[in-house]
Length: 473
Image 1 (tube, rainbow, N blue to C red):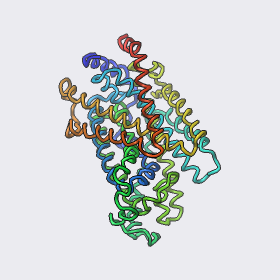
Image 2: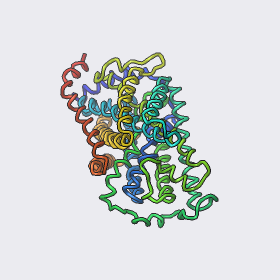
Image 3: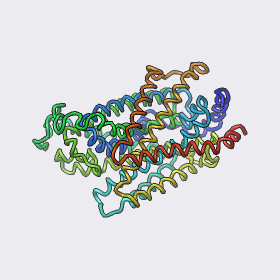
Image 4: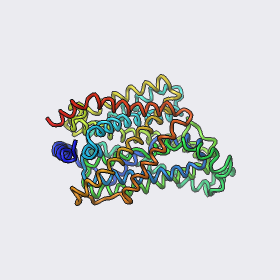
């Protein structure tokens, strides 16, 4: 497809669907929704695995991950502000890269989001078993899945309110954790045991030093770190449902990158001060371990409850994202048209049911392999989430020149340092992908993630002629 024909179809898609969604999302709600999409089990659960592999050097990896997220979300914001349409970057991919890349990226985005939901609901089930260990993992997974799917049948305003509350709870909780952790490591908190070292990087040199396994040993943790920052796509997907995309998205990006920096890097510094890096567990959140170390009454139970809300919030945001991708694919004639219909509340109900169907299949994994389910899911999800980042950046690499040539007036928000910063994040993404198969227990997840991308390309090769004909009907 040429860029000219891509422009025509982008305008057609905008005219058909831009007015269908309710425009009820403001900066505050969108910020909470974005943080809800980003801050999930990748931080609250998988960070323990990452710390155990990298030791204190995890701080360097999290700093690099934050820079990558900042640049990636800015690239996405640039395109979304210029053309706020349902389907997010997929519409722009179609214009500059063609329908093949759009088809693959769209379906991988959807599959990755469903895997995200699966990993989050598995993490939620693990948190719940802390109180009720006798209840099977799959029962918790099924119950939470029904709850989250039901929320997404509410109108956009109702959904935004519920997700805002859930994301707000975990954001406040993490900020409180940072505050209380700082009091604990400075021994201002009276209940702090004396064995906890005072804050400062000197405490990180014990148990093998800053890089106990060397950089090659720490490298496999990088994909888990990048996965903790995934979920930024909700900004672009919600662009068509914001009251004023230009101002709302720009403000949301600024708030998001600032809050994530404080919560992520602050949490890691405090966790490493409160709990030795080699005491991390694959079944208990490092946040819970850190609160236990402070000896705050009922602190661990309260933190576990907050983490439960946190991962359900991320699961909720992931479902919100993937059903809108299906909606956009349907209107681009790259998915069944029935998925592009809205109900009376303006909600893509059919797309929700399809996502719920695949989610139900992944719950079987929690039944068959309860001990390994989370590890497999989080690696596969991280692998595909990084492919989506790559697609966002590749699209922006070509979409910026397109905007400068055809719509320079729309280019009101720009990723700084273009194109070098875009290339930098692409390099970071590839480093994470290349390192992941070498981690013990991650090879299977990486294989599943790569297989999903391969299947999407094969499907396109078989269906491309039929789909391209439908595009011009």
